[in-house]
Amino acid sequence: MDNITGKRKRVGLTASGVIARPGTIAAPREYPFGTVMYVDGYGYGRVEDRGGAIKGDRIDLFFTSHGRALAWGRRKVVVKIWFPPSDQRR
Picture (cartoon, rainbow, N blue to C red):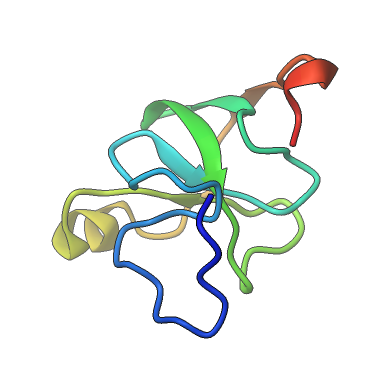
């Protein structure tokens, strides 16, 4: 990944270095990049980002528009989690 220290972050670029797209999830550090999650009502996604406001049992889901994110809102849902093999964790 490029060193962007002191530079403005490119919009849509995640902490893992990929472009955010449907299925991109931001999660706390307990969930390493590459962790796959099934979020009831949303579908499958992969942890590719972090966020300062994401703490505890919260995650942030990517939506293609602000309106869709607002329509989803905040919810308590069942999430199934598959951690990546330990040799793939970053």
